[in-house]
Image (cartoon, rainbow, N blue to C red; front, side):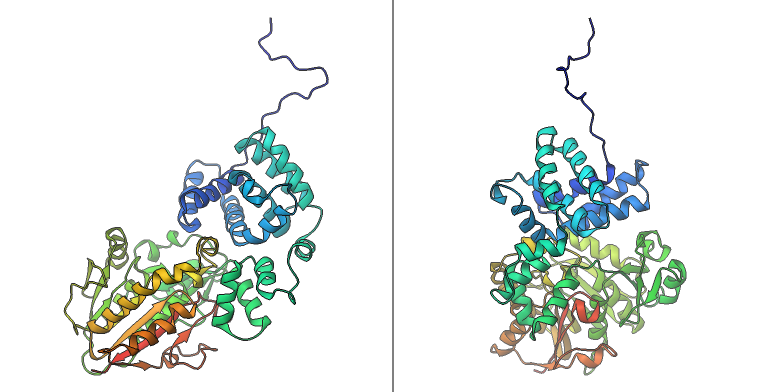
Length: 475
């Protein structure tokens, strides 16, 4: 007797699903983001490294997996609206793993150049592998409905008219929550064109930017290492190099040895502006009061070393303090890294000539790099950060001596996290400080506004939306 299972007459023989390592990896990354509240920029690199070590991944595979993950996360709001129009139940009743497969398929259909038949068939095969044959049929039916139109056609159907609800229209078209659209629009000001440019910039893949740490490496060294076809000087920072074709920065000797690092040009500008702000008197002791994970501290440490100054880098979380120590390792000048809370300082008042306080925030200025943050944050998060931001700035002003300078920085353009924090603290009794105009300290950078503080923008400057206010202690 045969051991093979019997088939009904006329039925198709069972076929094992084809395992596509690229799409399986992308699915695993999306599940980690959804289930563990992880960030894609932390989840994806180890998955790619493991796949390469297994020998079944090359550079093109890694690039496709990266595009599928980040593209799906950036356009998640838009794809949710389109998928909702193609299913017969509320989206919340669709199992999250099924929704991830549908979103990956929608991105291939509407956001890439992958042919329609290939996008559908690959997504259905993925569904068979990770969901089973039954739900794969559901995925197939939904994706065939989506494939009936292109992205522009779908947006005409699912986005409310701009004249009736501008914020909701822009939110669906550009895949941002309505409250984020409203907040960014308030911060930016102006009409429709500016906010559309900003929202669209949030959905673009950012360039990888390197920083050559002064005294340890140079931009020319980095440009030689990456080659003319992949490297350009930074737009604004004298220490920046842009990788136009991506690649793996960790493969560069200077990065591997800590003489250079990966750092957005906006973050570089913040550190350089604080380092170059005029101070009255001595300039020997610098403090980074919220130093984790260490990018700005490493640049400040290198700049301080050139002037014979010492840097103290403080970070509340011990594991992040270890990252700071790693970033500063080999710094040519004196420095110290401590696990300390900037709101409960272990240093004496007036001990420093320069202080940077890069406060925790909603991260709305880095939505290009962390697209999932737009779906994770809520308006009430602003209230949660507000007391901490004010307390950190108060303590920073106490830590600096009279005539010294504090840099208040945050990776958010939201007014509640930027100028409102500074104005509130300056109004408090016992705080004697004045603004230093930050604009001249970013030479060549256009569209910096009326000052004296500075707001950078992705669509205007090609950077994260970093904010900087410089304050001199007066009494």
